[in-house]
Length: 557
Image (cartoon, rainbow, N blue to C red; front, side):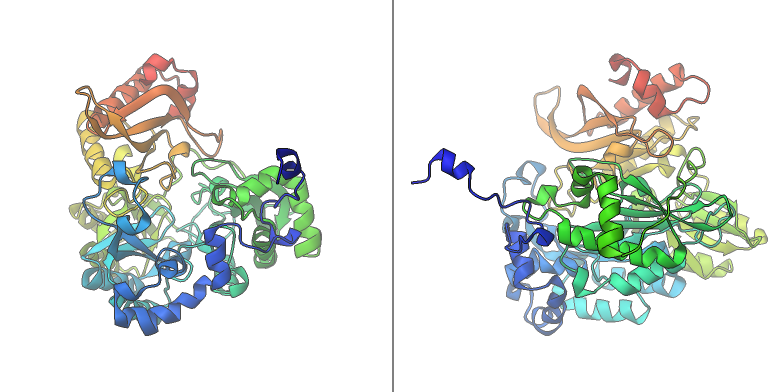
């Protein structure tokens, strides 16, 4: 018989770290990955599932390995948020998929944009949402259509490989890489090299969990390097040599942490090797026992930056990295690229704001047509669910702006249109508890009507569950979807409110005021009230996040 004392002295299983000899899977996800690499599902989709239909899909592929190619089953319509955590996955699954198209660096040619638009219209009931990681997501995809979709995406240099799953996901980059007048360094070549060396490589296709990357020299720090697993941030040495500062271990979800600087200077030609070292550490030393502790942020937090740097230099890249400077603080205000601004070459870029990233195939075609008609061949997606048209000649700017705005793609956008984001929400997501896109879109309309003169930067991020795909903890007003009780005693959709989160100068997570919640219906009233209090009380130059730190609880309610 095992007594409590003898149980206590058994050899602990550790955190499931491969490098320490723990190769046996300690949960179902790890078992699935050991049984068959996620990358191998591609051939089964082409040869078997697309021909035999939805019912032929192995459950381990359906809810696991298909993510390695950007495929998640959608939420079955009509299941309310109260059942999200109660039902089994097969009860939540619809027979349709969300398909995520990777857009590394947010870079799209018009040909690529038009192919996505065609696929959205032919196979996705028109759906096409720009995400806050620069991807475009289609919905309503049937398994039978997937091989044709892949063939057409790959013909123009796009793919869905490792767009989801425990893999190196899309690489964020500044949409203005190579053209921004204030850019520290252009990271385009580094994004391409990392993509070509590591994406789809079986050596890195079984990570403990997802792995998010940013590579940028943007003066506005638009790729939110502070909340990525690994980020390379443009810096310049006193000698004038340019390269990157390395950050590791950022991430939000239910246990948010800001990334930490390793304090090293990475030359442009070293970025891919250093990336390989960081992702190698994650693969080998990352925690695999518990899913909720399997992100690299927990390892970085436990090791500290000195140990992480030492292991990186001695075990992985086999050379010391020199100390380097911290990046300049982001230029003030907004970290997006909405509006009209000059490029290095005398042309202009025109950034515009779709409503919370919600577009459709026809709108994507229209964007491509407008860009082409005004002399541009390149568009970009941003990490704020917005888009940018590059290379617009000075005499074309006004016409392009007018035509975009006529299609409700605002260039001269209000703060609320420009800085409100929303995740997918209960419409399609199996984790969601509340609706997000329409709620956020209606909120924008109401706030523009009620507060037409409000001009300060203010981010409002709307999330359908606690997982923070829409980055609620780093928003001025972060809204976490949950069911709440209204004044009539009914359980309805609503939000827990986080206030005063920010990145950049005073990076920190939003303040939770005890009991601060709102119904979805009461959301416009709440935001109007707190924004009005801020306007009445703010000091010269004070941001909303700064005000929240000193405001009375009563003024935040």
